[in-house]
Image (cartoon, rainbow, N blue to C red; front, side, top):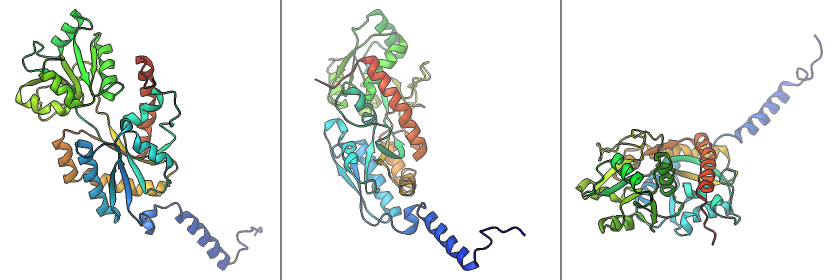
Length: 332
């Protein structure tokens, strides 16, 4: 039989070699399985003030994930800077899985709104999981002459630029989406930005604007009949507004929910990412978290880590295109 070096190894040597191989392989296994992660509390940054839908949903998620991970997932509200403080903290944090942040579309859009140095929305973060989003729609007063989306569009075409709509700010997801929708519908509206959705609700009640294009702070008035929803931007109709059509039903292939998820610093270990994803996924699909999302009309937007990264790549390209098309900038 021809000589082969491997056959010449003793049984003891083979076992020793196998031990080295197994030991190296074990380094790539999820750290959670080895009992090394987590061994201390995890910080989950929420770049908004306490209260509101995302705060409620993320806090519930953290509480539920704590049970699975065996270590507290602690919420840290870091509001300000247009919701970007969480992303800024991730740039400075170690990629060990102990610092995470809610990851939303403003983080992907920001680098294209300014000439100042910020971050690469694709390469500078580690996507962990896609979670949920918000309900958006176009709403008018209940006594408005616009009974449906078709009549609203017809009036806008007859009076270009005279009808107004509010959003929660220039360069927000709903602002960009509404401009995209206007382009598709062939209409021109005047944008009236406010600091938040509730200011738009107040302005519509006071007849200062013609419509709102924003998240669902208008839902109580819509249910009461004070406002009338002309369309919703979710993939399917909303349970509380079963007669209101989606944009797709109106002929526009658009779904706008401003989905968000959780991300960590660049370069996280795949095993740690997997452990975190699995814990947050269990929490997301729990009856407790589902009830909170239902209460706030938050559509499910679950994506695993790989699919979430793919989404970030596609969405960053879209954000760059829309910011360029609308000539948006936050530079003074």
